[in-house]
Image 1 (cartoon, helix red, strand yellow):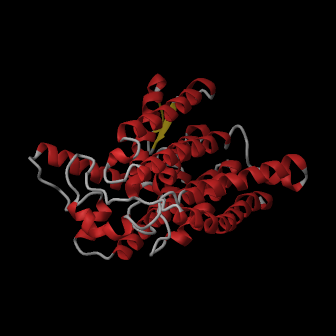
Image 2 (cartoon, one colour):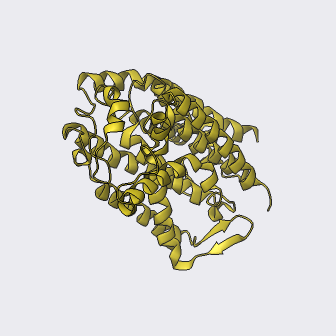
Image 3 (cartoon, one colour):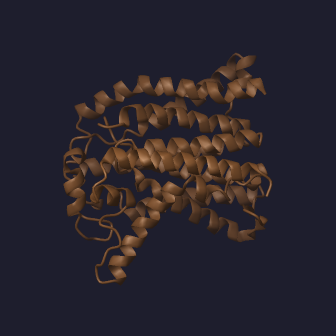
Length: 357
């Protein structure tokens, strides 16, 4: 038990330190080469204008670098590989602390890096393309294609290699989906990815993601998926390092290289802590990740309302966190209230995942 706690906690602390040390190097590069949008976004996802968004974020959009998410995934990668190398070269206690394993962490680590690289391509293209609209980076269709492709490959591995075809439903137990597990898997990953648009206010996404991954670290730990728990806490430590520099005024934004990496990895971890871990990780995902889900749903509702109701909107501006800004909430109040909600959802989700229903 003691070595397991050290195995879970120590890498997280080291990841935080690595992130803090990496950030000045990254920041110097981002500011030197002006890695920010050259124009405020003026076209919404539905093709309409964005005057309210421009009035709220014009100054910050064109002067704050993107790609801050690099801090997260590069810190997690460095720490993970460092423990793996030490474990295989020195052995002893280091081998006990190595959490990179084929059955628990190879898949989420691979997904984290793949999502990060695709997101990084989008960020670079958006910066070079001007950033005035979605044509600046990869189109939404292309991003969804890449996320769908990654999730298809992983779902194929789950179904055919790991023999996973069921998910846990609260109060009902295991639900065997058969071959429908594959499309269900893809839909979940794509939907959670869509919640990445929560990266819109200084400090908001970092606090929300930290709570979510910490919750899954707890679930994995109590299900004896120690390696997976350690991987989750490493991500938490990396996110906290990013958040240290992202709280107002943000030194940089997470952007797609961070949000795509984290959302896709989160969905994979939810499945790994479900029937694969004899738990309810998938069942409690809507609770633990509620801020992401609400964010995504609010944008979908806004788009559908404008299309089906002759341009009428449900929110002043979507996603929901920008609506709160538009009605007069200061950005810091929106951020901190989201943090509170995220923590409450995380605690409630962990309780539901661990109790016998």
